[in-house]
Image 1 (cartoon, rainbow, N blue to C red):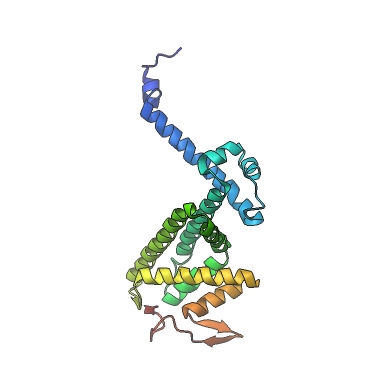
Image 2: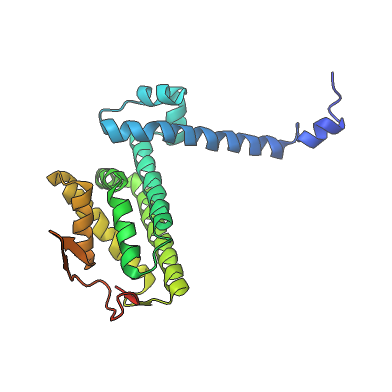
Length: 232
Protein backbone atom coordinates (compact mmCIF):
# COMPACT_ATOMS: atom_id res chain seq x y z
CA UNK A 1 0.00 0.00 0.00
CA UNK A 2 1.31 3.44 -0.88
CA UNK A 3 2.27 5.68 2.03
CA UNK A 4 -0.20 8.55 2.30
CA UNK A 5 2.71 10.94 2.71
CA UNK A 6 4.38 9.87 -0.51
CA UNK A 7 5.14 12.59 -3.10
CA UNK A 8 2.54 11.23 -5.51
CA UNK A 9 -0.19 11.44 -2.90
CA UNK A 10 0.80 14.90 -1.74
CA UNK A 11 0.96 16.17 -5.30
CA UNK A 12 -2.52 14.90 -6.12
CA UNK A 13 -3.94 16.52 -3.01
CA UNK A 14 -5.57 13.30 -1.80
CA UNK A 15 -6.64 13.48 1.82
CA UNK A 16 -6.79 17.27 1.74
CA UNK A 17 -10.28 18.42 2.86
CA UNK A 18 -10.07 21.50 0.62
CA UNK A 19 -9.13 19.34 -2.35
CA UNK A 20 -12.04 17.02 -1.61
CA UNK A 21 -14.41 19.98 -1.38
CA UNK A 22 -13.19 21.35 -4.71
CA UNK A 23 -13.59 17.94 -6.33
CA UNK A 24 -17.13 17.69 -4.95
CA UNK A 25 -18.05 21.14 -6.25
CA UNK A 26 -16.55 20.33 -9.64
CA UNK A 27 -18.52 17.08 -9.85
CA UNK A 28 -21.66 18.94 -8.83
CA UNK A 29 -21.22 21.58 -11.52
CA UNK A 30 -20.61 18.87 -14.11
CA UNK A 31 -23.76 16.98 -13.11
CA UNK A 32 -25.86 20.18 -13.14
CA UNK A 33 -24.56 20.93 -16.62
CA UNK A 34 -25.35 17.40 -17.84
CA UNK A 35 -28.89 17.65 -16.48
CA UNK A 36 -29.44 21.05 -18.10
CA UNK A 37 -28.07 19.76 -21.42
CA UNK A 38 -30.43 16.79 -21.31
CA UNK A 39 -33.49 18.71 -20.14
CA UNK A 40 -33.35 21.65 -22.53
CA UNK A 41 -34.15 19.84 -25.81
CA UNK A 42 -36.87 17.81 -24.09
CA UNK A 43 -38.53 20.93 -22.71
CA UNK A 44 -38.28 22.64 -26.09
CA UNK A 45 -39.87 19.71 -27.88
CA UNK A 46 -42.46 18.58 -25.35
CA UNK A 47 -43.00 21.53 -23.05
CA UNK A 48 -43.05 21.49 -19.26
CA UNK A 49 -46.10 19.28 -18.80
CA UNK A 50 -45.00 16.81 -21.48
CA UNK A 51 -41.58 16.20 -19.95
CA UNK A 52 -41.14 14.09 -16.84
CA UNK A 53 -38.28 13.97 -14.38
CA UNK A 54 -37.83 10.33 -15.37
CA UNK A 55 -37.43 11.34 -19.03
CA UNK A 56 -34.75 13.88 -18.14
CA UNK A 57 -32.89 11.47 -15.88
CA UNK A 58 -32.85 8.84 -18.61
CA UNK A 59 -31.55 11.32 -21.18
CA UNK A 60 -28.78 12.41 -18.80
CA UNK A 61 -27.97 8.86 -17.68
CA UNK A 62 -28.71 10.01 -14.15
CA UNK A 63 -31.12 9.21 -11.31
CA UNK A 64 -34.37 11.16 -10.81
CA UNK A 65 -33.21 11.92 -7.27
CA UNK A 66 -30.23 13.83 -8.69
CA UNK A 67 -32.61 16.21 -10.45
CA UNK A 68 -34.51 16.99 -7.27
CA UNK A 69 -31.23 17.27 -5.36
CA UNK A 70 -29.75 19.89 -7.70
CA UNK A 71 -32.91 21.72 -8.83
CA UNK A 72 -35.60 20.79 -6.26
CA UNK A 73 -38.46 20.83 -8.80
CA UNK A 74 -39.04 20.28 -12.49
CA UNK A 75 -40.28 23.86 -12.76
CA UNK A 76 -37.03 25.22 -11.35
CA UNK A 77 -35.07 23.13 -13.85
CA UNK A 78 -37.29 24.43 -16.67
CA UNK A 79 -36.66 28.05 -15.73
CA UNK A 80 -32.92 27.54 -15.37
CA UNK A 81 -32.76 25.82 -18.77
CA UNK A 82 -34.62 28.71 -20.40
CA UNK A 83 -32.42 31.32 -18.72
CA UNK A 84 -29.21 29.55 -19.68
CA UNK A 85 -30.35 29.09 -23.28
CA UNK A 86 -31.22 32.78 -23.58
CA UNK A 87 -27.77 33.82 -22.38
CA UNK A 88 -26.18 31.40 -24.84
CA UNK A 89 -28.26 33.01 -27.58
CA UNK A 90 -27.16 36.48 -26.46
CA UNK A 91 -23.52 35.47 -26.82
CA UNK A 92 -24.25 34.01 -30.26
CA UNK A 93 -25.86 37.27 -31.39
CA UNK A 94 -22.83 39.24 -30.25
CA UNK A 95 -20.52 36.91 -32.15
CA UNK A 96 -22.69 37.17 -35.27
CA UNK A 97 -22.53 40.97 -35.17
CA UNK A 98 -18.78 41.30 -34.66
CA UNK A 99 -18.10 41.69 -38.38
CA UNK A 100 -20.69 44.44 -38.84
CA UNK A 101 -19.23 47.60 -40.35
CA UNK A 102 -22.28 49.82 -39.95
CA UNK A 103 -25.04 50.18 -37.34
CA UNK A 104 -27.49 48.80 -39.91
CA UNK A 105 -25.44 45.64 -40.44
CA UNK A 106 -25.06 45.30 -36.68
CA UNK A 107 -28.80 45.49 -36.01
CA UNK A 108 -29.63 43.14 -38.90
CA UNK A 109 -27.12 40.55 -37.67
CA UNK A 110 -28.61 40.68 -34.17
CA UNK A 111 -32.20 40.39 -35.40
CA UNK A 112 -31.45 37.56 -37.81
CA UNK A 113 -29.66 35.53 -35.15
CA UNK A 114 -32.29 36.07 -32.46
CA UNK A 115 -35.25 35.19 -34.67
CA UNK A 116 -33.58 32.06 -36.09
CA UNK A 117 -33.68 30.47 -32.62
CA UNK A 118 -36.54 29.43 -30.35
CA UNK A 119 -34.63 30.43 -27.22
CA UNK A 120 -36.60 33.67 -26.74
CA UNK A 121 -39.92 31.82 -26.98
CA UNK A 122 -38.59 29.25 -24.50
CA UNK A 123 -37.63 32.06 -22.13
CA UNK A 124 -41.07 33.63 -22.53
CA UNK A 125 -42.58 30.39 -21.21
CA UNK A 126 -40.33 30.70 -18.16
CA UNK A 127 -41.51 34.28 -17.67
CA UNK A 128 -45.11 33.10 -17.67
CA UNK A 129 -44.32 30.35 -15.19
CA UNK A 130 -42.82 32.78 -12.68
CA UNK A 131 -46.14 34.62 -12.51
CA UNK A 132 -47.42 31.68 -10.45
CA UNK A 133 -44.07 30.71 -8.94
CA UNK A 134 -42.54 33.83 -7.43
CA UNK A 135 -39.80 31.71 -5.85
CA UNK A 136 -38.38 31.29 -9.37
CA UNK A 137 -38.50 34.99 -10.23
CA UNK A 138 -35.03 35.92 -8.88
CA UNK A 139 -33.28 33.71 -11.46
CA UNK A 140 -35.26 35.35 -14.26
CA UNK A 141 -34.49 38.82 -12.90
CA UNK A 142 -30.76 38.07 -12.74
CA UNK A 143 -30.85 36.69 -16.27
CA UNK A 144 -32.55 39.79 -17.65
CA UNK A 145 -30.10 42.10 -15.91
CA UNK A 146 -27.16 40.08 -17.20
CA UNK A 147 -28.70 40.05 -20.68
CA UNK A 148 -28.99 43.84 -20.68
CA UNK A 149 -25.58 44.38 -19.11
CA UNK A 150 -23.71 42.16 -21.55
CA UNK A 151 -25.65 43.58 -24.49
CA UNK A 152 -24.82 47.12 -23.43
CA UNK A 153 -21.12 46.31 -23.10
CA UNK A 154 -21.05 44.62 -26.50
CA UNK A 155 -22.78 47.55 -28.19
CA UNK A 156 -20.62 50.14 -26.42
CA UNK A 157 -17.56 48.26 -27.67
CA UNK A 158 -18.82 48.39 -31.24
CA UNK A 159 -19.62 52.10 -30.97
CA UNK A 160 -16.13 52.84 -29.69
CA UNK A 161 -14.41 50.55 -32.21
CA UNK A 162 -16.14 52.03 -35.26
CA UNK A 163 -16.69 55.59 -34.07
CA UNK A 164 -20.47 55.43 -34.40
CA UNK A 165 -22.55 58.22 -32.86
CA UNK A 166 -25.38 56.60 -30.95
CA UNK A 167 -28.71 58.34 -30.46
CA UNK A 168 -29.25 56.32 -27.26
CA UNK A 169 -27.07 55.13 -24.42
CA UNK A 170 -25.83 51.52 -24.82
CA UNK A 171 -27.93 50.32 -21.88
CA UNK A 172 -31.08 51.87 -23.36
CA UNK A 173 -30.34 50.37 -26.78
CA UNK A 174 -29.81 46.91 -25.29
CA UNK A 175 -33.00 47.01 -23.23
CA UNK A 176 -34.99 48.26 -26.20
CA UNK A 177 -33.63 45.54 -28.47
CA UNK A 178 -34.50 42.69 -26.11
CA UNK A 179 -37.91 44.12 -25.22
CA UNK A 180 -38.75 44.25 -28.92
CA UNK A 181 -37.32 40.76 -29.49
CA UNK A 182 -39.37 39.17 -26.73
CA UNK A 183 -42.57 40.94 -27.76
CA UNK A 184 -42.24 40.29 -31.50
CA UNK A 185 -41.21 36.65 -31.13
CA UNK A 186 -43.88 35.81 -28.55
CA UNK A 187 -46.61 37.32 -30.74
CA UNK A 188 -45.09 35.79 -33.88
CA UNK A 189 -45.07 32.26 -32.48
CA UNK A 190 -48.73 32.64 -31.53
CA UNK A 191 -49.50 33.80 -35.09
CA UNK A 192 -47.42 31.08 -36.75
CA UNK A 193 -44.96 33.48 -38.37
CA UNK A 194 -41.73 32.29 -39.95
CA UNK A 195 -38.26 33.34 -38.72
CA UNK A 196 -37.97 35.60 -41.78
CA UNK A 197 -41.24 37.32 -40.92
CA UNK A 198 -40.17 37.71 -37.30
CA UNK A 199 -36.89 39.27 -38.39
CA UNK A 200 -38.62 41.71 -40.73
CA UNK A 201 -41.04 42.71 -37.97
CA UNK A 202 -38.20 43.21 -35.51
CA UNK A 203 -36.38 45.49 -37.93
CA UNK A 204 -39.60 47.42 -38.56
CA UNK A 205 -40.17 47.85 -34.83
CA UNK A 206 -36.59 48.94 -34.31
CA UNK A 207 -36.93 51.42 -37.15
CA UNK A 208 -34.27 49.67 -39.21
CA UNK A 209 -34.19 49.85 -43.00
CA UNK A 210 -36.28 47.01 -44.40
CA UNK A 211 -36.93 45.63 -47.87
CA UNK A 212 -40.35 44.67 -49.15
CA UNK A 213 -41.19 43.31 -52.60
CA UNK A 214 -37.76 44.26 -53.84
CA UNK A 215 -38.14 47.90 -52.83
CA UNK A 216 -36.22 49.61 -50.03
CA UNK A 217 -38.38 51.38 -47.46
CA UNK A 218 -36.72 53.89 -45.18
CA UNK A 219 -37.60 53.00 -41.59
CA UNK A 220 -35.07 54.97 -39.63
CA UNK A 221 -33.17 53.44 -36.77
CA UNK A 222 -29.98 55.12 -37.91
CA UNK A 223 -30.05 58.88 -38.23
CA UNK A 224 -27.01 59.12 -40.46
CA UNK A 225 -26.46 61.10 -43.58
CA UNK A 226 -23.60 58.80 -44.56
CA UNK A 227 -25.70 55.66 -43.82
CA UNK A 228 -23.06 54.42 -41.37
CA UNK A 229 -22.46 56.85 -38.51
CA UNK A 230 -25.32 56.81 -36.01
CA UNK A 231 -27.50 54.23 -34.38
CA UNK A 232 -30.77 54.46 -32.49
